[in-house]
Image (tube, rainbow, N blue to C red; front, side, top):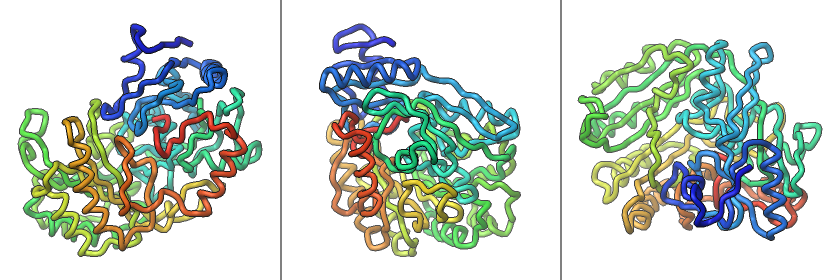
Length: 439
């Protein structure tokens, strides 16, 4: 265990994360390499009367840590058991490492669109995955968790050993302890059928309508989404898309796609059509999310329905004419995500049919406030159809938006508070609803 204090050489590099719009300034940062290091860091914080936050990759940072920050990126072990179809994943592991090792055995984890995201934090937040409609949330398939609780003790948490804590950690969005490792199920998926179709924004109305129809007819084997974003005129962007504002329909299926499902989209005339067989090791190519640190701000709303008037509002308010650049991400939920898992967890709002996310860059002075003003208009338009929100999909500095619903229903909130009182009665851990998960 190595500990850095403000002013020490290496301090700035240790606190840096993927989200550069939130900068941690802890009194001490503990670079953990083991569960014992994490336990020692919690005991150090208790002795100092300081709160504890945790960071692996820093994708989800929202509130600057000012007490003790535990960084876990050195805890990068992955063990795949192909016979049991499980993986044991340490706290600092990114999904890319799990995807690669599982694919060697014809298996796949329930990862999301970005292989660079921390596996543990993503899963603790629920985990809306590429194949979510087929298999459910990532949190639904956690077998066991190794957790350092606020007393500095390491606990092996399962449905039988600590049922309340096991329920709360899987999808609750509350830092009740630092998860140093987790055992998760892997799925027998060597090939994903899908990819993406890009369209010019001039066809936005037709593409969004076709996407809505697609989600109404899609089998549970297909999980899809549509993104809307302006792409820069740089060499890194393929020529057909360079400098354009585009819509990107993303598809991931466990079975070959029925051509009739895609026919209406293809009739519109995509700029790029890359739909086919995707090896499980290459699923990150479906979305092509950015993998470099940057500042961004955004939030989300869970929808109970997707009416045409909302699609029109999103296209108008967050499209090419918006006063700030917006990245829109509209994902189809339902299917297995709508059903309760075999062992209950804290993932709320399973009745949601879609999730709408809106993000904007936030690296320039005044960018956060300008972006939030535009995002507020989008979420206000979505409010009549909203059923909730996902805490893990809040990005950048915390800011109240009255148009956004709560990230938890009242019953889940009450039960999580009871678990928090039991396992962290002194409030040692900084709430991840306002800060960051181990991602």
